[in-house]
Length: 367
Ligand SMILES: *Cc1c(COP(=O)(O)O)cnc(C)c1O
Image 1 (spheres, rainbow, N blue to C red):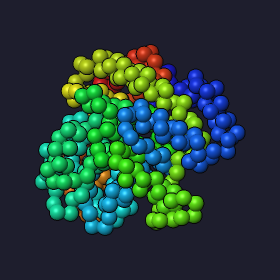
Image 2 (cartoon, helix red, strand yellow):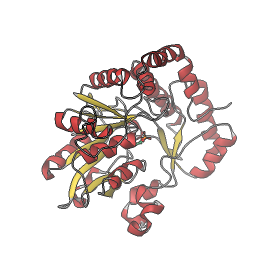
Image 3 (cartoon, helix red, strand yellow):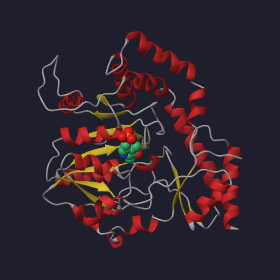
């Protein structure tokens, strides 16, 4: 049996007619860049999430960079960033001329809120709350810290579209929130795309200006901006897919439960923990596995593709070598997980037969 890590072709097969029609409409209207299709997606996304503004941009990375920059983050400022996340989180801070200050992770692989306050100083301006793997971090506690020290809260929801904490969607807690619509995300385009959401009118306006060369009306450039707009084809695809996101997330959650019930008594692995009050969007199903590298190879040889998110905590990447000097003691939890994290296949079209096969193979490996 072959179990791919993701299966976008099967997902798209079922909605291809709708998508082709939507794309065809863009061609007819020539609404290729930030046109009517993008506007209507922005409105639909903001409405579904329950926020005032949605600003479509070129990617999730651009969303982070633009929202930080337009929030006033600049040279010498420090931004709290989790050590365990995708590199773009640090990159966006660096692109503003600011400094990412890394914090270790908790048992849910999200930022450890007990380790934030000791890293705050007079240069700290913001906390980037990343909701990793599909589960929200402890955003209520982070909000308290932000209020106490007068810091901005920027949420990165790239892996947690419509995940919830106590019934409230990810992206509705911060001063602003960023989403990636990279094809493999829970809500994915067919190319690069992302967005910023916020309830702040003036921040929304600044982000809208920045993504389009700082142009306020035809050829009236009022600030230095950039070209990072969402294109019409991506908006057309996303608009169709947005109608399915709750069903797809529900399917992911059901499949996660299937994994959990089958692997519950395997003592060599640790299953993902779901914090009380959280609705996990299971962008990824990440386990901690003993002899991870051998297990990964064994699964690969059995036709099962797995992933590692992420192989190296950000402070230990080559780019930060001179700063953190590979000192594992600084990030004990992230370091302890480094050789154990393994992402099993999870996507709406994964079958129970495939889950049976994956879990049987895992048990066979440890026997
Ligand atoms: C995917 C991702 C990004 C970057 O998004 P792109 O659209 O690929 O630029 C940022 N942060 C996290 C947590 C992500 O998973």
